Image 1 (cartoon, rainbow, N blue to C red):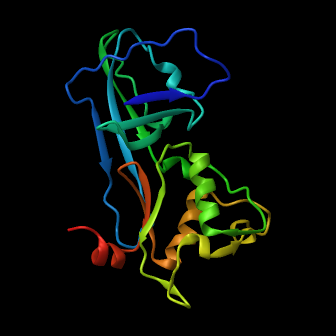
Image 2 (tube, rainbow, N blue to C red):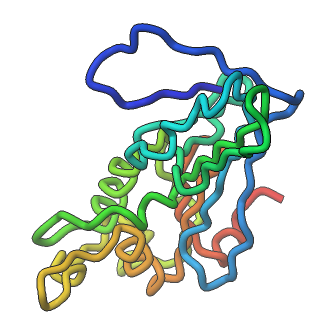
Length: 213
């Protein structure tokens, strides 16, 4: 497990995190209905605050500036960025109390605005959104798609394009990246999830027919 923070330069010192339990990290994938596109997940890391409000600066960080990467057997398993909205302090104690840090993989997409123009492939837009989310991932998997184009070509996202005008309203206000991703994938009955260090784009039929049992 590693935590990194975006900064203009190296920090003079890095503090040590203390954990109050043997299993301080819990990763959860929330329940999503079949029609929902983004199957987001969160990781809650519980640490011990050595003093009063040691981590209070986390209230005011720029969303996406602190990232948690979780490894399993030396390989990337999960990645997400700290969401300051979920940070709380139990004010009943002055020191040595537990603080829960909540990281989200796709939650930040709801705070970022679309900023591309012209004709774009769906894959290009998605990769751009993932890059701006600042999460770490080991590839984009589209093996479980069951829609095909003429010539028996699998309809992967690089084969489909859309005009960026669709993601701006009549006043020129851009949609959020969350709305953009949903607007691209929902008409194709596609879903997005992070698993085992990769981003998976799939449809339920493809998952049923082709996923390992």
